[in-house]
Length: 100
Image (tube, rainbow, N blue to C red; front, side):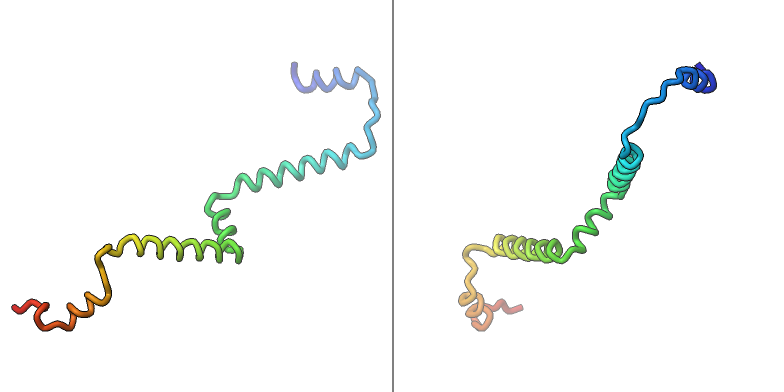
């Protein structure tokens, strides 16, 4: 069936159904909400991450997490037998230094 035939069929039905008063407003609200959801989904992922990082609390908590991670990884890399007193004594001892 072509569009013209379908339009003629609808016109020949002759029924007029009353619409609720808020019908047009509800239709436009649904269109606007669908556009808002679509625009959120169409934004690239890096824009969402950048906007999240730009917020002060997110940036501060991310910074604190990176500092804590750095301190933890730094503590893991220190050898167990490393002692600052021994290292200092070796650095100033004339007997512990190698001669070329």
